[in-house]
Length: 298
Image 1 (cartoon, rainbow, N blue to C red):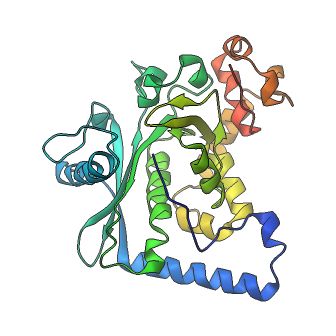
Image 2: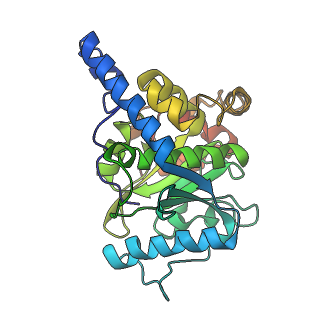
Image 3: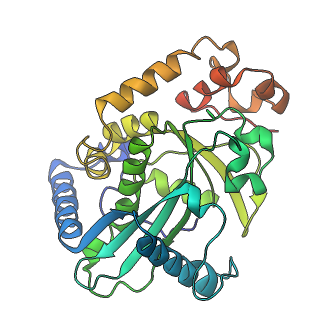
């Protein structure tokens, strides 16, 4: 997936916010509040529930992935693949024009295919994803935003990416997901961190529509950190906690605790974790790697 820099509100980390004067931070918060109000007034976040909405997402993907970027061939004005039926699709729609301006999908886990059922397995070796829990991981893919923002204000446009991420959080809660995986540009990892969306790079870079970095995150860990670093962003993407409840956080806490005794992750730096050491540890213990923001390399 390819994103452009998120410019504007909420782009400071907790450390940079401490360098702002009180007045400057109030202005920034007021600006983000105005942007949220504009996004709520002008944009609708939808989870596709019928074939018509899915087709709209596939048409937008065709414009972005086929016509603009040349990543995929597409056919008949739509971009689709075999992963669409096992995915939940998020759309961002202009309330004024009714046009779909953005879309993303979350590929859900398959008990039969396991981690081999994710699109990024086409580009990554299996051991890179081996620590992920089989039944509660989703892959974020086909993130697409149209360049035509006709009918929406610049303030609402600035929040379109977070609108999609809000939909991703809703889908994750509804499907009991605990972890994300994705394959993205390394610059995108830095851009996401600007809005406190922290993914952890895992494994080597791969060639997939250019140089890309496999990355993962534990959802509750990421959201907890976001709440500390960017509380306004957290409030928006979780609807002040309504989309990601205490129940989800509690479930993830229990999930992490079951693997907390794994000695291999205890304080180990990423450079010391090899392919052989990852594969030697039971899956239920490996998942704690991301809770401590530990990665590994081949």
